[in-house]
Image 1 (tube, rainbow, N blue to C red):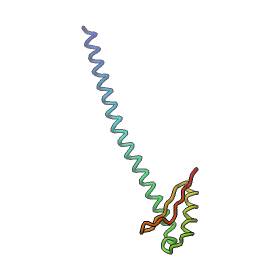
Image 2 (image 1 turned 60 degrees about the horizontal axis):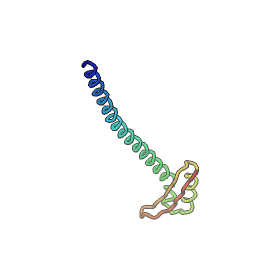
Image 3 (image 1 turned 120 degrees about the horizontal axis):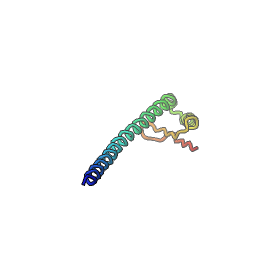
Image 4 (image 1 turned 45 degrees about the vertical axis):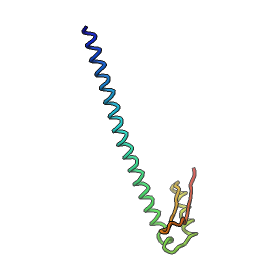
Length: 99
């Protein structure tokens, strides 16, 4: 009789621990995903600001070839894919850096 009670207690405790692990795993993975997405967003935003600052004068003066050259150099140095689009939605440069 005593063994039955111990096994019931052990089974219930194991089930509760398993449920707790799954619940914690769910919330931790949500938090990690949110932090990961936030870091990527911040990095993309800072890269866009830097590229915009570098190309600002050329964009204002509509220097297409210079924009292409600078964009290519930046993409190579930073190992990025860079697309430059003007305010009307016209694509000015698309550089795909593949390694």
